[in-house]
Length: 335
Image (tube, rainbow, N blue to C red; front, side, top):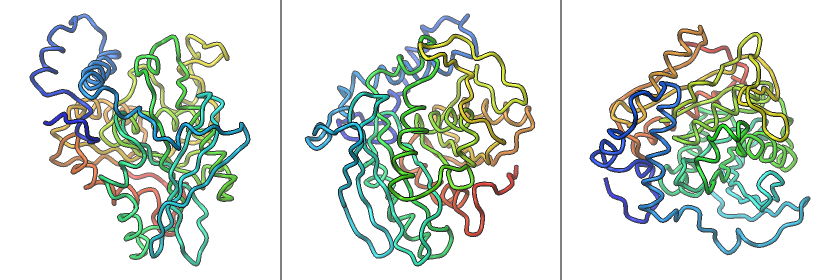
């Protein structure tokens, strides 16, 4: 596995030898609940050193100031049945301008739904176009009639400090408000899609899948389906319990790890992971927990690692799961 200073879905983890050495030094008494988080944190620490956090570098247009209520839209490309544009807005949660890319179908039937697709930790939204060809794949599926028209949103979910995101001192991470509230509300206003779970779905790869699952368990009233590809979960998370547990340690705004913002029914769930992926065991744990809880979900595995190649293999099924023609986000789930 190479660690050149280029974006790569495979570059989330250090080489197996270094990873094994680091994990061998991990105390065996560490609980099973925190162990997956420790694995991911150590991997991200190694990768941050190796890449110099190049994914955090901002383009000149990213640093241009925005007013709190300002939205800036830039056309990027026009295809036969799809338009791609960049939408910048000021994030009060992050106290800085943020952006997302929007894939807008050029179809006779106007889009009535939104699918938010989140990138991995060391990626940018543009990488989903460059390496996964999300726009090309979605455009082909639209032309073939295999998916219904929907606005596909690729948000910027880069953060400078992974430990801060996961620390118990911050039980309600920035990404929740940024994606589930700010991005969703800007997209809703920009594309005239009402904020209702029958119109909204969310998913992602690696950290983007982790983020999506956390959003879906706290905002079930807003998102009707969720997909997690090559991701993981926090062992302390609860999943749509009839009676929510105590929120746990609270942040300055009174929000905890179990705080539910918009309660709702269990969303439809799609899980996928390559059998050679470093996170395969973590995804098996999530699959097992949902199965034991009697929560319906689709579970897909095949040979493959934490790579763009494997993610490309599940991109079409992912789109079809969320945007099948004639099926809104309220479609009943299947095992």
